[in-house]
Length: 451
Image (cartoon, rainbow, N blue to C red; front, side, top):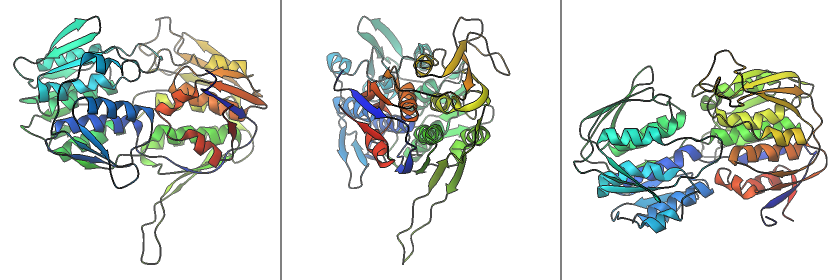
């Protein structure tokens, strides 16, 4: 692991300016959507992250020609020659991404069959694919399970259906959208996820020619169409990365401007950030003029001095507090006076990273009980999904091993906030969702190095 470690010299506030690109949780899905078109698609502001590389590889395996566009971060997808890929080739990607499951609907439409390898992703809970398989079966897919994965066929094509999710799963909602747009008839999805990335995916599909209505109470209606064309799209910015850098600014007592960050999709986070004692300023975009090239807007985050305040929060589906915001913010909460309470309701095993923070001097106790306003689906199921953070705590350096993507960035923030020199192992996992994070750290004045 010696080539996958970052040495972090902590105790220095982060100060400066960085930029976030398109949202990881939209970009990869928009790339899959390109399979549905009968003409090329163009996607801008694509971050250079591992998940994008995986999806690009999977698309190329299936005959999609993927090329870099003229603009930095632009990708062009030509799906004219979609073809089958061998099970062995697809399995090369198994374990590195959960995206292959979303190829099913588009490939069933294009080829009449699809294959799903064993799925990877971060180990923060089982995240079963039952919802996906059940939905595909209702569309008319036949699923055959084999030791290496699942083979799907659609002997009579795919047809619209009525489907209600037991939980507003983002992945299952994406599955239904990507399958329903070319299915014959009308599909009604109840209890759908309505995250900003879902709405942006709907915008992509609508540009392609889809007819999708978003009703009240998490109901989405999709009217199948006979064909879709390519799209040209600039995705929403990555609100998870933006919040991660905000939490880093707060935990280290610094000031970070995140260019590209947008207020509208971060309102819930911004409210909590201010409640904790953080400060922020929205810097709106200034359009170019004859005498000026214009300036990109963003959000400037900083620690205004004084003590941070403890808070109680629960993660939830949108428009609640996003589960991916929880881990970075908890590092900052170790510096707040009093007892903060975090109730994780989205992933049942997402608090394991707190062991490393305790090793560094934090005082965090995890509980099986629902320490929130309302019981959640993990209550009485023996999952440690609530945490009490006592602060402020003096963090000291330690050797850390990254367990998953978001916990990894949280460990990195903790190492930056701690006194002394830490060694963070497994940092390449952070490349799955954070573009050029080492260069950005250097730009913000962090003292980090590869050994």
